[in-house]
Length: 376
Ligand code: HSE
Image 1 (cartoon, helix red, strand yellow):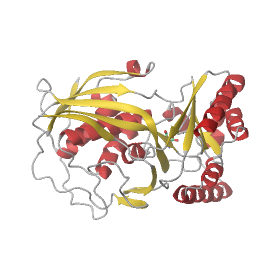
Image 2 (cartoon, protein in one colour):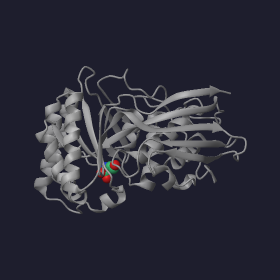
Image 3 (cartoon, protein in one colour):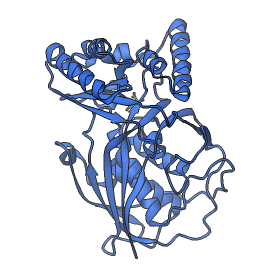
């Protein structure tokens, strides 16, 4: 199934004075924290439709942990070594201006459940959005998606596909768009499949920790965790699906003033701890959510016991990763991380009657990236 990307004309927007991260995506060379205010138009006006620079490209986007406790919908970070790949090629058999999904493969049953109709596929929606931003009319593209992340796991599966696709389309045309444009393309995808939140897709594209200061206009702040600090995420995923839409439906419509004050102060402490590389402070804040986690944890069998087990095993803190069901705990030592993971897996089994698996991962400081390319 192929679909046109010409739903609306491309908006011409001047360069951002603050950043243009169109290439490379990595943020390692950037200062401590930077703002990416999308109210400031972000790309050089494209006077002509760009030509493809590459015949094909392969991109990768990492898994992400959204919310981090009290940062619901405004804070997330990228996780190293696990994510989705997109291979994209210029395809003369695809109608010019359209994108077609040729195949989807990957972990578990994820690949089989996903639609190849680009209008209903996170990668397809993001690819179409980028093609529309670039005003592509003369070439057709064919996309292959390799899922490294299970669906509905709380690890930003949809965002990783969207981020990898957005980066691949941008890169095949030489990378004219900024990171902020790519986040907007990813957000278009997220809003259709899981909800209007950028706390997965922004870190999937930018790497590291990202704070979404505002959605209208979109205003992103990249928070730099010190390079010399070790930080390990213990990610324990039970065999249980928690679709984001369902987990969002469980959220309270109203909150008390005291919970508002508590969560805001904890979120502030979380941001300060990230910037200071203070893992103990991060862990305390991570564990502290009084608004979202109390509504969601009871929907994930065993979650309360898993959190307790993580803390008892020495984690600095533990909460639900994104909308769940994955539980995320923090530590500064990889071996301890594995021990914490074992205790958490046991707790999912004992209290939730769920099989679970654990992995211990570092922070991904790079975000979505090109992994290979073939020149035309
Ligand atoms: N902030 C979103 C939520 C993240 O918690 O619903 C979903 O991964």
